[in-house]
Length: 227
Image (cartoon, rainbow, N blue to C red; front, side):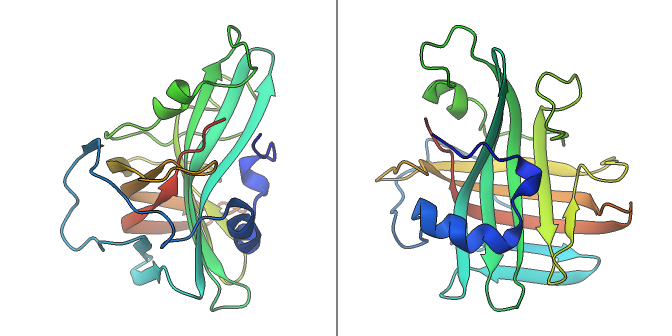
């Protein structure tokens, strides 16, 4: 069973703990031929990574002994609707406190006919397709008309302020997000079944409505947890 903590409440300082709990490691899981995939833009690193430009400053978080990467999921449920948030977190441990970034696919799934009380593996897999997605709002109100459907990106700087696409005005006019490739892991685990490459650009807001511009974003890492 997955963590039912809300997406907003997982700070990047907990990424190392999540990493230990899930057991994901950039060297643990070999990959096999992608079952679906697009063409990455030029200059995308070949391995697990997070790279982006934030307000004109290039930032790269490569996977190393001082970096953790983890599949990420949180959920909430109300009646027959399951609110699912799944993606990838990358956090660097070289700074104190560390910095990190995560993306999550947001979706509400009807489980009223489920015999287990959880979404099926097929329903989870259907959330992740090689295509572009709009930015959604994870407002943690299951069944709210504008709460779920799309993606969310959040960044934590060394000041530990959360900057996210659905804070502030959440205006994402001109922003983009695409799943570029989905590669099954040769040895799926309880906490990750695929390696997913995403590319994105967006506006990030803090709780006071200040904004940062993220461009040329690219992340590849473990993702997709099954029940």
